[in-house]
Image (cartoon, rainbow, N blue to C red; front, top):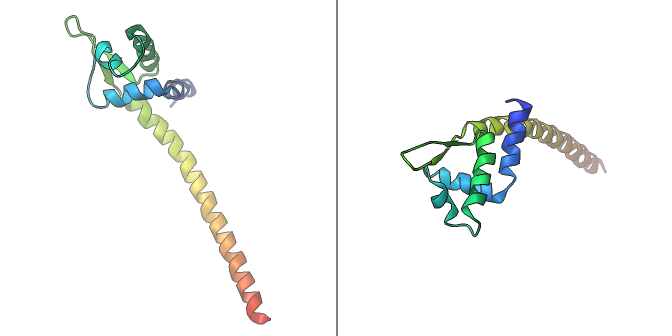
Length: 116
């Protein structure tokens, strides 16, 4: 995943309203009116959030007669998860090495206390 795409994905996810919109779209497509219902913000504000999500590739807006339903495209989320997974693996490897060092130190300490 390119740096620009990753930046747009994380920037889009930084806002709690946009995360809530994505959570709603994970259940199925919805119109701006349907998406605005649970929020105390205007439909134009929801539309602005949708544009940010659309630029990040997280939302695809369609056209169904006069309706413009939006739907989730999880591809950027999967790519971000893959990117984060690399860091999780690195951290896990470091913790495993630290566990090994601590185990060696503990066994050395316990071995020395048996000598006294």
